[in-house]
Image 1 (cartoon, protein in one colour):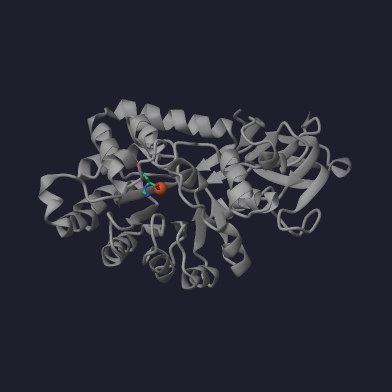
Image 2 (image 1 turned 60 degrees about the vertical axis):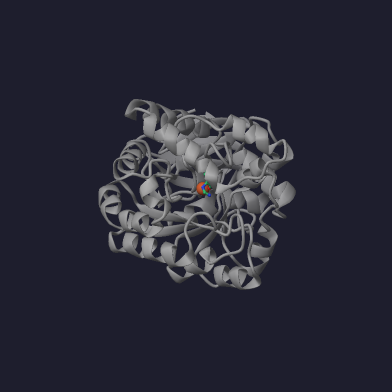
Length: 392
Ligand code: NIG
Ligand code: FE
């Protein structure tokens, strides 16, 4: 296999505390990385790099692991510009807007949906995202949920069945939400399970309550789909406790948390995934990352990219928001956007630059990862490698 060395990296985030400066992000100054096939073979100081087939000079740029965006909703059609505009004039966000996107998504062709997924994946890749989770949830019929996941699965391995996004507006369910839960846990689950790794539920007032969410996630588990939960986004509620009870990989949003919720997360391996793009785009109060970190919880950062509450695919933007408004240090935010996302997907092969990991990395037009927060809005990602191949 061909070996390639990337040399003269101004600073390298490895996310291995046993390497470099001993901090959780394992920073190495004037570093080199050796890639062998699709894997990282060696990391260390540039002067000590072993001989390789090829050598590329990073020219004093910083290198971070490719971002792991563990929460997005990319299978949709249309957008919600008018809703955003109205919100910026004072109207509140509610889960009801999801219906607008459901109607547009059902009306779209497979080719249109597939092209949209490709477009947003490419947009994310240009900003350094090398692993992208994405969900269904804008189809809400057996046919439309299964096709959303089939289309998503053609472009990413990390797919999540979110038939339980809201009870759809169809008249049959208006007076009988239990009939929709039966569909989600029955015929729809059977059609979707072959295309999904995860099952998710929007556990929130106006969506699904704790008992419905438990029934949905338990049914998914029985079909081999592991849970993740949209929890405590718009109000306090049972989502976080349920996520911990079911050993969900992740409780996502975590904006309204009691002390008991924070303790439960801290004592579990359920990752608290924070989605600052949603609070930004809905003008809501920020989740308190500092409180979670100080309690000992594992925190991930993700975009939640969707046309309603967070229409950004940019992990650097989320890092900047988390540092400015959620009490995270730049080191913590970069860790959460890489290793944290990997933990939220229960993956050990991504989110770090250490021997054996997949060779996914982003080169920054900056001397340090701190610039991701220090230079908000600036397109610093200048080169991206995924699986040992340069892709940007
Ligand atoms: O993660 N919370 C539920 N789902 C999305 C919003 C979807 C929408 O508004 O279209 C979220 O914020
Ligand atoms: Fe979401």
